[in-house]
Image (cartoon, rainbow over all chains, first blue to last red):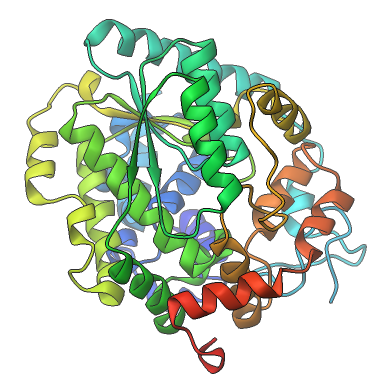
Length: 82
Length: 343
């Protein structure tokens, strides 16, 4: 299942204040400045609450969290692994 | 100016929506949740103490390095770590040139009473003041980042975090501790091990932002390639550096914190504004932020504290509406070389 859209909605609402123009599925959150280090932690809080997953400390890596596509794949893998 | 009838966020706050009853969407989302989630606090408290057991057993040096500003929150946590928990703490004060006289006195008092090793990092004053000035004039931060703190505070905090991370790596200290209040960080980030690749990515992104403002000045405060390499040789997760923010999960009461600190000789400053207990720069930073963006940079933190039951709405509004000392504003403006028309 593709989780890109709910995550996009969260990021656009909370970090871009409705301006979705800057955000493609592969935009690096950190490199583009969409998220800073505190923003990553807020994203984790959202993912845990919205999807009922626990993000372990060693899962806080760019490959899992640094773009819409990475986050969607990560959430899918966590939910499939349950 | 309309203000949320439940918390303190104004209608000028980025992204806010006030419902017909005057309540903001953040308060509506929080409605029905426990004021303070005790189960969540216990979860992170337990995680913290498990981490401490691992840390204390692992090596003979410092257990933690702590960002120590002399303010009430970091003074309380320093006392908690070194006094109550008996940890070996290296306290680091980042002297940005605007620590209030009472704040300086409190630093000496509390560092002495807690018997910690304490160092003061005082960066190149000219370069640091230039960084603060350019942070205001060039506006390098996103609106989201500015929701949480002013441009000046963001620059200061980035430098502090970088320096502490650098210190932890160089001295092989397993944990970094901050005195962030429950309103400043999500509880999920109060006990976290910093993943090496994320450290590199966030530091590079940080320098991408700050570097535009300060160039290579102050670069020596930040991580160099050798630090990343040192991290990357630590493959085991058990060797990752911890970040602790204990105020997020211990019982937090401003009044109790101040009363406990007074017993150690800490004196509530009369020379700072309502939102700081150590820093003269704070007033100026808040003032320019409000003029530029139309909301107080402490609004988010205080809204979170009000929503969390740590502070009444009335007390929060009083803090946000307190007038700055004009003499302090003029002093800071003159020190930083910012002309009135610039911000």
